[in-house]
Length: 197
Image (cartoon, rainbow, N blue to C red; front, side, top):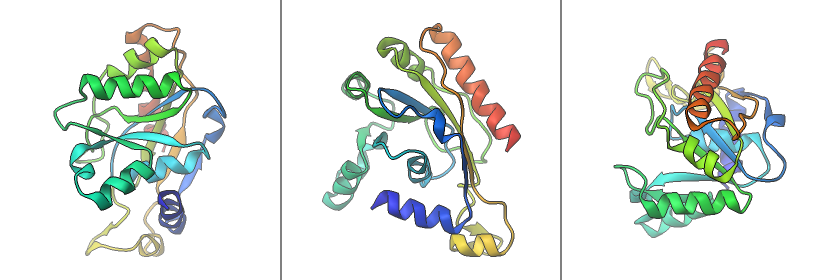
């Protein structure tokens, strides 16, 4: 259902997606993206037919309706103050099982759309599990329902001529690099993707 809704929302807005071939068809992968909108997980899900697992704030798991939705989307809870040992252990387990995990390394949505510094934990996870890091840069999702008047449907955004959302998947970054190099190269790759967009 989440993938279907994402297809409708981003398809109606004329979203541009590039670089899907950089996500491996099998084996573990750690997608690291910037974060602009609550819709970003649906946007990232458009890049591959594989199940992607996400961190989601634990409040979304308290109500039964949203809990089932989050679990169905492959999400797992994380404390707003930061991931606990239990959460990190779950990520390690997913990667060791050959799954795809997406982390929004800025830690929270960017308030103005500009790229923030990355929290370095993802690089340690990649190094520990020997998982390639897949940098993703996305733009335009933050304004998807906005225009001068306020909220609007994506199709309206397209009709009034706003640039469509864009998502580019960069080339994998090797886990053979040092933790510092993985972190720095991933941030630089996302920055270059956004500058090009």
